[in-house]
Image (cartoon, rainbow, N blue to C red; front, side):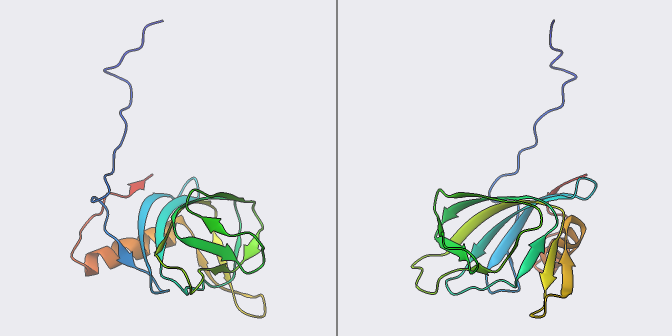
Length: 156
């Protein structure tokens, strides 16, 4: 069987400089690589400053994380993610992301997230929801404010 290269879909390349780093609500920055609303998939790369504490949240889908630099952990767990660490989080997991204040460098993590993050109040009630659609809207809005129109996020 011959493969018809002229009709095969081509790969999509997004270079490091193609998507801007945008400040997040925790004092770090992020770039959105993928937002597939129909699949419920979003892939984000986040840089956390030492001492960052992310609101406790519950995942409705599974999450894959790969740490590029620095260190971070969940307050509810004993392990620490360091450069080269891979983490799988099953749907339904609840945790509070913590970046130790004594980190000497920025913590850089790549997250592949399915479904939504249910951001929880101290009493366990849902304060807000973050999913592919909302993070795409927020990223595009913040990019526009920074003078970047139509960032090449991979979408449906």
